[in-house]
Length: 394
Image (cartoon, rainbow, N blue to C red; front, side):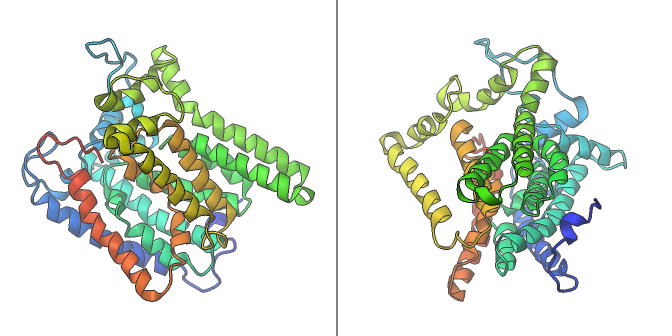
């Protein structure tokens, strides 16, 4: 099937539908670039940059340096150990597709900083097109404002930083669109690529499993046997790739616990070295942040998610988008330790924008969009900008 099927099949009937998402993407990048440039001019000397770095240097701090290590040196076969004999932070926490593509761009003569940012910017433009098509399928009539919320969101600067988020969101949007359009053959191709950019394979397998249950209990008569087996196969395929990087790390290092130990090393600075017990990181993390108030924060987060995903605004949204958001939130609840990177880790629930796009009246929509833009410099200041010995990892 032609590659254009994912962006042209059932596309909006008006000509040049792509002009709106690209125009919105351009405006959003100008806004985020302005904020990033303003902060770069005020950046003091840090471990990553000199004082007052240029925009490219400022856009490739923090974890972008790990991607640079992967692009130039690959992955270690011997893991670093701390004084207690535990695995320390290392490159295995960062998946290969993004740094390898950036390395390919470097063959043109671009420096790492230019290749990484160019890859993120180009992927964000493609994401704008695919997400617009996805939103059109999930909730026709809401796609324009939904895309504006995503591209101008508080985390929008990430779309042009030396991080893998832009590329991951592009593949995720294409995967969700293929699911929505029942382009099963594309899922076999897209899932492995997506799962080797950022963790997402297990969450997508769960989303397919939830959809199987919905089809089974609500529409069993119109649920063909062939489609049932297709979903079972795709779910297993996605789960396999969800564990794929762990398997690769095990083979390369000879340790079955290497990948999990690597991931746990990042949270040890907060709560010390702990085992990964599913669904315990959030209670542990929230207690670290808020002491005895943590049950209120946890309960409030759960209630807010339920109200958003089960409320009247959500019912008109295609079930694929809602099931993905539910599955991904369950995945984060099971494995993620809440800290300052949590906001960035929530970017894959971008289909929530289609629910929020139902906000009325017009002034409320304007206030919502304005709040998104105003919060961009807040995120940059608290999470990206380096202020001395900064521990607010973006």
